[in-house]
Length: 92
Image (cartoon, rainbow, N blue to C red; front, side, top):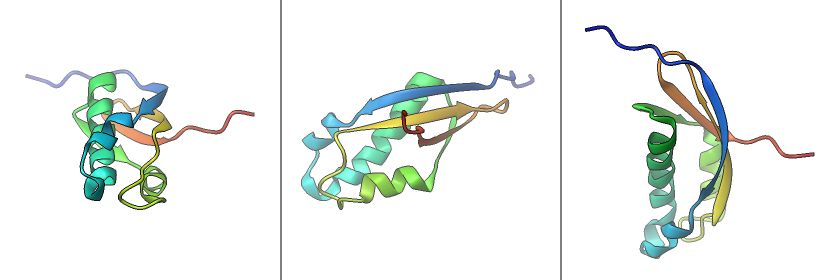
């Protein structure tokens, strides 16, 4: 059985990370990264996800206890089904 090719797709999402604050303070940033992966899987129908380092730096910028409450991300799916998650460009 051959794998189905999916069409390339780019979307911008505002990902709410407020639920991350229900986790213990010493693991919130780790939970935030996991939440972004789950969010991407749910909304982009992805099996394989790659999170860029700039997203990781924003999540961890204020330490493990204080990740941002929300983050604006751009998700790009290629023909092979790989989704790359990066920061969305700033509005002008």
